[in-house]
Length: 210
Image (cartoon, rainbow, N blue to C red; front, side, top):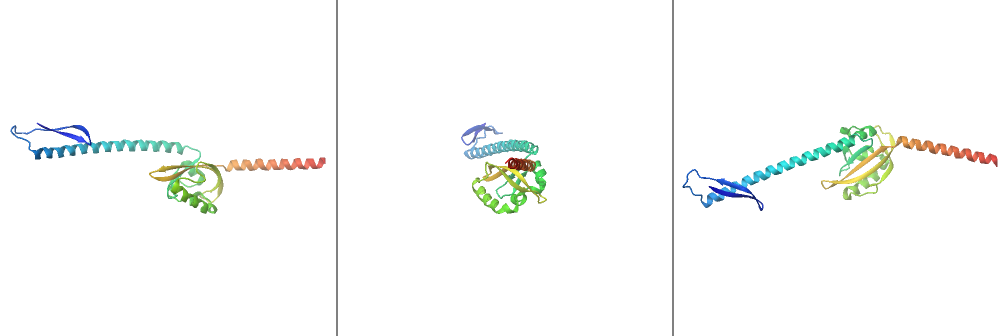
């Protein structure tokens, strides 16, 4: 019998054994070279199978992670929106559907600034996007801001926006957490109105005393 080592890189992974039907058969150098080639093919097949299995495990892990993230964001009360490197929407959760009026199917792939940013802010938005796509940085990254947004029906409303940056496959993506603060702003305006009325009454009372 003749045994040919099967080596991957510098690692010995096993031996490939061959035997002759005829006992007087002797393996020539050409036969041994051919057997080495066959052994190499076997090693490559085994390695390819290993790579395929590892890739399948990685894809399974990735899908599970995506499902967990989707489940978490789907139940969130705040809109979760992701913008890709072409300033187009790549993620849009259920709360975003409720707040802005676009379904996920309608929103994905749309130009973000044309979808939720009031037209008067488009120029400033585009300037900021250009810097962000190039560097992953911007004046709004890592901050919480109160801005105006626009719904599908064209109505504007106040939002609280927090943006973070994440690099995926070599490209910068922006993830925005958006809260509709219409009720909060209305309550603040009501408090402000009541405070001004109270101050007015106080000034009137002081004037009468004088």
